[in-house]
Image 1: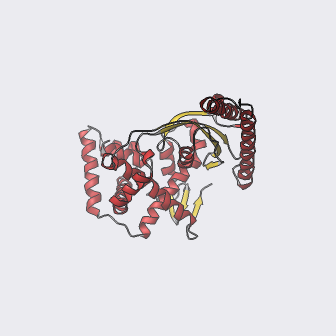
Image 2 (image 1 turned 60 degrees about the vertical axis):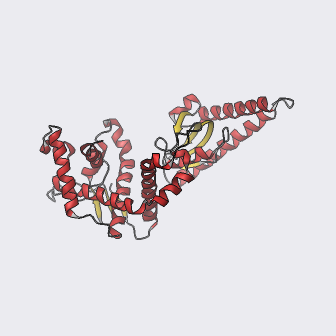
Length: 327
């Protein structure tokens, strides 16, 4: 992917702070993170690629993403991770050069991105600063340790799974407690149905036949519960989500739980940003063994994603962190 494309994507994925607009015309910020604004302009820019009818629903999720980016930026400021101005200028000139080579008008590109040149340089700075920090942290030893501990992330292993989703409504502590109680009740009913079906399996059946019958019992009970209780559109197919890899398709808590399951084992309730899930893995395809050197770049990307998550979790738990979401 070209630097132009990367920067165009980055502009939609990172928070912009206070803009040079007259005080009277300046809208209220979408959020304030430790005294710095995540502007409404940044939020609208991030929502722009979405269909108009989806923007209101996605607003909260996008604000959360922008706030998390702001927390990472603040963390790097605390650590005094810095980038030389000449590095920013070099990257900026590369961007302008690629715009020219693509026979695009630089001013129109900025207008389309809805960003000023000064703010673009801020985004380049933040991007370079993160890359510098990641390079410092992602040592060869750490990357190899990650690779050896989680080979299924990189070797193409996939699982196929069904799930049941219960979403808190309203989305507050009482709503979450009610949703958790319901998903626990659904799990108990599924476990009971599986146990009842298992009791009907012929005792004189050979091991393979018996296992197939037990698997079918679990699959049938879970599918029926998904159709009855799940709020995910996949309920129409008994909660079937198809095959997916360890990373890149499902949110991390869900993928981590799914890959830890044995086939036809029902998970405990799994919490994600969508609500509470029960998961039943129906198949697992093991990938091809790979050497670390062949996937080192991918390992570094995964390490970076996990490092970012750890920073966000740490900053949110810090009592000195102040986050205000606009109304």
